[in-house]
Amino acid sequence: AMCKIIRGVAKPICDQYVGKYGIESIEFGNLTLGALPPTLQGIKVYEMREKELVIEPVIRWASIANVTVDVKVHSFKLSAQLLDLHVMLTPRVTLKPLVPSFPCFASLCVSLMEKPHVDFGLKL
Image (cartoon, rainbow, N blue to C red; front, side, top):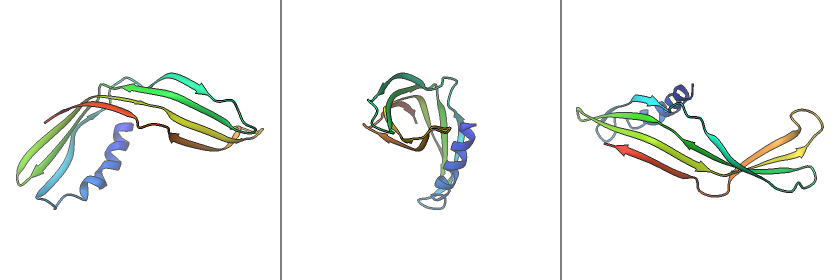
């Protein structure tokens, strides 16, 4: 399902470049994110202020991703392959104000406290 969403979001972005710079087409040759899900490595919960909950989960994703993008430029086909994607990030999630009815909060704010660590292999 995620691969289909990624293809759908990326297609209009890639289509902007078709016809420019000699690019004839941009297509995904292969798009798999692997079978490993993101994992929660830890969580920090801040002392709750009145009617507010602040948590910082540490999320890590070591994917066996295989993404191939094929670009046709002046009748030459070029391929770039993304392999072994690793992502680690710590978002701050603020739930406020807390309310007595489900889902128990009125708004949710998510922000990144640091730049996420991203590592990957690229094969041309």
